[in-house]
Length: 308
Image (cartoon, rainbow, N blue to C red; front, side):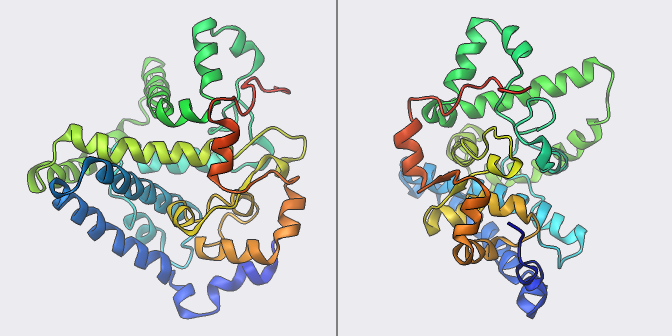
């Protein structure tokens, strides 16, 4: 199903779309909200801080995702600057940009080696893991394990890949990590010195729940299919989750039109719902509650790629 030209060009029809006003406004509201939550963190119960901190942390990650694909009415330096502060601490923005752009080669979606975000493993790699890691990766296909333990596996994968790069004599990422460290420093200064929150608290109440919410969104976004566009899901959720993910939960629409601004995605889906679901083979969930009911304790698929 082709994306109508009217949808692709709509960002240039009125001034607020031309200058990406909804996204810029959201960015300008985000940082005061993040700062206010940190400033008054001691006045909030832990469970509420966990929920709000995680929501804001994932929202920032969604804004970074938006800057990679959309915000085309702004110069590159500005759309990068708006989302550069590493409030999530752990992943340098340039590395995320490069890795995620590779993921968007539709023909390679779910490929265990070519898709940087694939949850699949090749059969030879699987055979070499041993029983412990096979069990871990199988458990990681359940929603409960993915959300709770998955963030640690993601960090382990990052450390392993970067460590292998260094051991192979590839120092091309050292500059990225140096700049990232310099960028993290003022964030942590504000968190610890200005707002009086310990680093451990920030990791617990912001970074970790943010990664949990990210793991929820990506849990069943992709599956293997011979048809590339049937590999991309639609999760039709509510406005709270839609804003959190900037409607990237309507993932098939995003993959068919990666530069479509987040605020146009739900409009397009409502207008072309039948065509979208036909194009993606009805790879569809009615919200994250349905995903939890079906896959909280049961693997969503066996993580050995059926083709590669």
